[in-house]
Length: 127
Image (cartoon, rainbow, N blue to C red; front, side, top):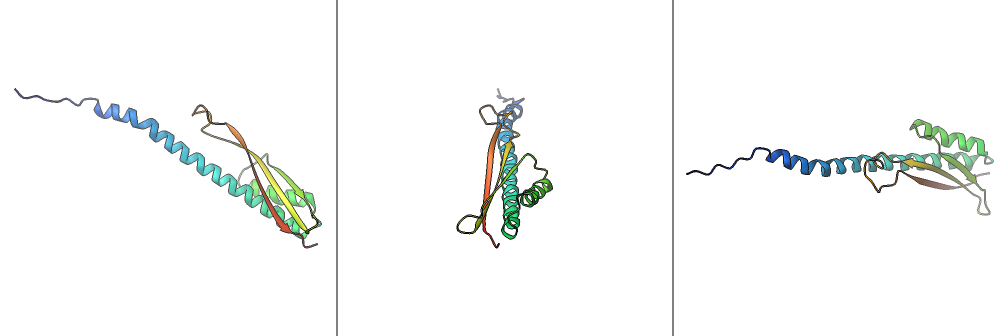
């Protein structure tokens, strides 16, 4: 007598076991990409604001406008731009703060939905 193994449904069970892990990895990669892009954009906004501050009085309105132009180019809104200086060492510092909202925080329980990102740039004041 010949024993015949039936494997009906085996691939469905394997797919059901692997799919959640694959989806978690995929969403994790997407989320890290968004986070990295956001950090780069707010770093660029702080640099642009510091560049304007270094060559002006520093004029806080112009600094905030320059930083917000960089943020608007990437569709990032709600950021706070602050300017300090010039200090005793003739340095101006521009800080950009943004509340980052995750995509996967609602999908994976236990992950935070929002957290604060802050980037600062200091340049020598030329005034």
